[in-house]
Amino acid sequence: MKTIISSTGKKLESGFDLRFGRAEWFCLLDEETGETTFHENENKEASHGAGTKAVEKVIELGASKIISGDFGPKAKELLEKFNIQMVLLSDDSRSIADIIDRIK
Amino acid sequence: MPRRKRMRKVAAPPGFRGYKPYGNRHGSKEHVDLLYEEYEAIKLADYQLMNHQEASHLMGVSRATFARVYESARRKIARALVETREIRSVFGNASLDHSWFACEDCETRFNIPDNLTGQHCPLCKSENIHSIKEQI
Image (cartoon, each protein chain N blue to C red):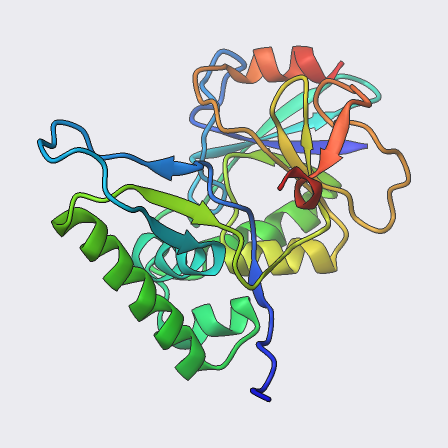
């Protein structure tokens, strides 16, 4: 199963991003192998529809779970439709590596 | 008999039970009851900057009803500020999104889509979770 974590940078030490659609980077974690890859969010500066485009990207990457701070109404609706699990964390002091450690 | 009130959909209950003024001289007065749907209306319109049409759609009511709920919310907050009254959150006519859960161990909130069967927290794997609907 693959998981997306919204990230502020492209390293494991980078901080967790509370925004989903306008997150700087997406960290894709493969839970079976433990491998991580980072994907830049090209739509973070979009004037509208950033959430929707981010959802498209998530589907493209084949993730079934997303960890972020909050999801906008449109993104939420789409993710529900595609049966992708949303996980909301309200604490942004953790790094990506910390979050991955907790999932394992 | 009046027409029954349609339930207003609320994504999550407010994260507070109430707000209290401090530094006021005249002791405590009666409080103002802010309903869940009023909190949601303020959140959608003034925090997430949605227009009333979108917001009303999310809450499952007509645009006009949304406007009324929103106006009532603003008036209550204004009254609480001017008259230095306590604000309390009250359930009201809300129906909460039941597919959302909270983990008791790590305070993560999450939903469980239809294709998943496990009832555990996706982050810490704790089974100590509860539906956000039951919280009230």
